[in-house]
Amino acid sequence: MNLRHVRIVAGRELLDYRRQRKVWRRLFLQPFVVILLLAVPVLVFRAAEERERKAAFTVAVEGNVDAVPGLRAALDRAPLDVRPVDDGARAVVARVADVAVVVPAGAAARVRAGEAVALQVLALPTQASGRFGSEAVARRLDDLRATAASIALARAGVPAEVATPFAIQVVDLTTTSGEGTRFGLAQALPPLLVIQLFGLMAAAEERIAGAKDRRVLEPLLVLPFRRLDILAGIGGATMTAGFLAAALLFVPLVLGLTLALAAVTETVAGPLEVAGALVLGILLFGAVFTAVGLYAGARAHSGGEGSVFVTLAQLAVFAMASVTPFLTDVAGEGPILLVPVLGPMLLVRDAVAGGFEVGPTVVAGVGAVVAAGVLVRRAVALIDAETSVLRASR
Image (cartoon, rainbow, N blue to C red; front, side, top):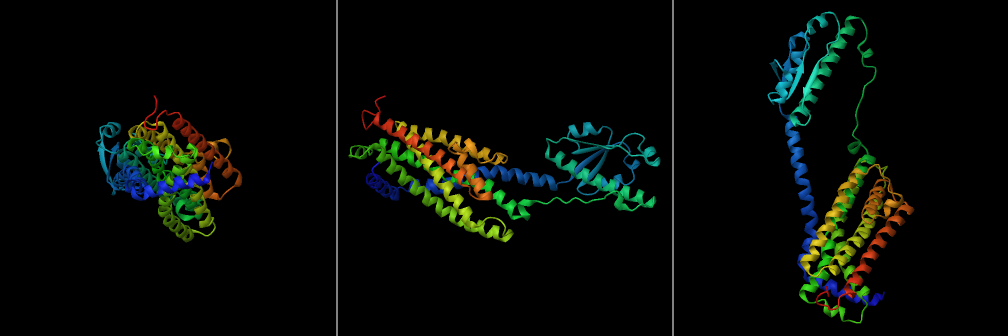
């Protein structure tokens, strides 16, 4: 590879990029559009869940609600509304009530005898109102059971602490510890990096396939430069533009995350490790995505055909990015790091969560470089196979 030729081609391409606002709009706006499209359904679903959680729930009671002391008072307070019925299951299935409580026959006699009463809570978990309503009813019944146990123990002269020898407190580590915050950040950053650099595929493809449509690829191909030098120059210019867009977006992100982590704890790794993980991810993803775009552009006979190839490649990459949050138990080590996109995502995740390790970093880097090299070599072969610089011979 002749680096002087590569620099000449890259300089020419960068000059063209300065005049092509469409490329910059794609690099800057596409990530926001994709994130918004992904976030809107989630936000709508969460808002609907919050409305259902705060709504009033109708509780159908089958049997004598007054047979159990305190049951009516526990269930007939907002957001619960008691409604006596003959068949609790039918009421829930028919959506007449959100939840049903079944009081068995003979409950009053069992209470007088000091025996436990087995209550049943009926709900449809597939319905948000049934799921949240059953949770609200279960909490009320737990409170009622604790109150009844305390009263019975007090009558027997036994301290109430006997019934509850220990207390349980659930702590959300994502908001109370730096490690939890760092783990959540590690889960979110790799998909964000992938979405941000999606545009490199289309940009690199357009420089080849679009040039075929505009009949401007010939001046490059007739130069006494190797095809590899030409593609390397185009790819280098595309990666430079993509890295500039990523830097403008992710530098403020790193600064904001640094302040957030510092406000939570000082025990997690510093901002340099977060920035290092971002730079490493940008380099690995950028190399692979640019190589994919060059291959698509060399393979396509026109810009439209190249766009189809890029779209399919983006769907495959997006599928990998969607799977990554569910791979929390998969360690970023071994052969899986050689997978071009998945390996760097796991590497960035582990680097943000716990710092860099030399071995996994080298393996992921080798996998990305090899994949990018194979794609570029294949693109060179496709261009060399054309008998005309205008159209392929096929």
